[in-house]
Structures are given as structure tokens and as C-alpha cells.
Length: 101
Image 1: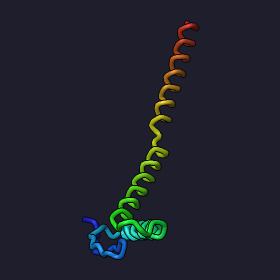
Image 2: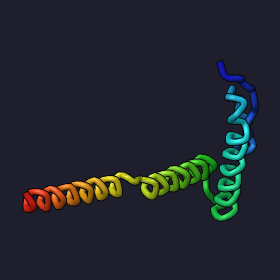
Image 3: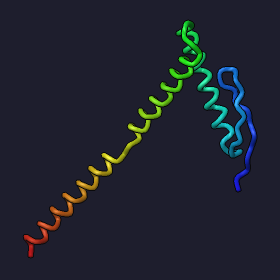
């Protein structure tokens, strides 16, 4: 069983109690810090917006960035290209072998 830790994460001046794996503490704290920085920026840039709108815009920005990173990290097209190349080479070598026989 992993070592658990009880922490409080503050997001937009509200405290949220969490029970996490001790090894993940820094990641949780960094995530809260990043979110608070984005919320602060949106509050500064859009002072007339409702707090819920600010949080929704911040959440949207993080989800968008996550999707963008996943697309960049998706190597399945490269894997498919390599498989096709491997198949082409195998076919070529097979044809060469048949012609020699």
C-alpha cells in the first residue's frame, strides 16, 4: 500500500482537502500553483468577468493545452509509417530472393 498524505490545496483562495500519494505531493502543489497563476492572469485581463467564468476559462485553457500536447506526443502515425516501410522492404527482399531462385 502506498504512503498516503493529507494536504490542502488552495485554488483561487479556496482550500480543498485531498488525500494523495506522498510521492505525488509536489505535482499537486505545482498544479495548484499553475492554475492560480492562470486564474490571476484571467482576473487581471478580464476584471468584469464572473469568478465562475474565470475558472471555466482557466480549465478550458488547461484542457486545450493537454489535447495539444497529446496530439504532439501521438506517435501512432510514425509507427504505422515504420510498419509500412518494414513491409515494403520485406516485399522487396522477397521479390529479390524469388528472382534469384
